[in-house]
Image (cartoon, rainbow over all chains, first blue to last red):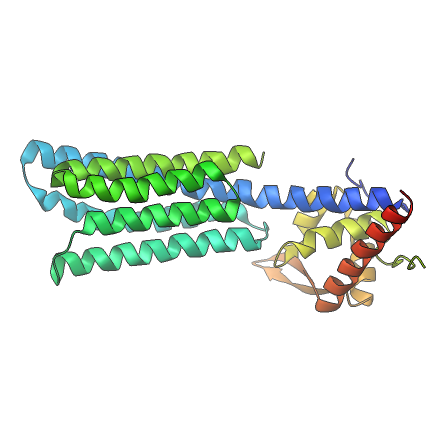
Length: 194
Length: 96
């Protein structure tokens, strides 16, 4: 059905239902399509950071490069700048739930990492990879997208096993994979809602 | 008996505006204009009608120096919209 183009004509019942369905779908797609860029941003950042730390650790032999993880919040100002383009674009329930999921993941990851480094030593890679998988799977469930649900499951459950078996340095490659999955999630959302 | 369709909603542009607002927290005038493809004048008139029926609330203000109008669906509007959809479904199933 065409857009109203300023017309205000009376419609049949079938036309009305078609208009409601189309308008709701278009609005939903527009909002979700826009939210996909944040998945791509965080995915790229995670992948690049993981690979940089992996290489620095590998070539210098020092695990201290892991402190670079605390630079990850640089993604927030970048996201804020990207958000300026969203001026006037409304938010819907799905976009808000996705925002909550990933904010909670971010806060839990940062707090767990700080505690692991400064207070109680723990297998932080295992914890974060499981949380990353859970956040990814829940996002998939919210988006009603099976590939994203399955990718989250593989990352979380498979990643937990691999995190225990791999040596510390190589565990960073798991995070790089997690980043790639985030980018893939963003692209899936984008193409699903074109 | 088939219920009478709500005349406020049974109009293309007003229905399009309500269909957008039902799925979002709130939407500004520019977004509604872009999504409906309506002219500013016609959209303003239809928004006023929806507001007069208490189906939406309209907040007018400024973002910096630019005028900014935000529309939000009310509970009355949600109920009217749901009732309208139910009436349409009844009508269509009765005419099958």
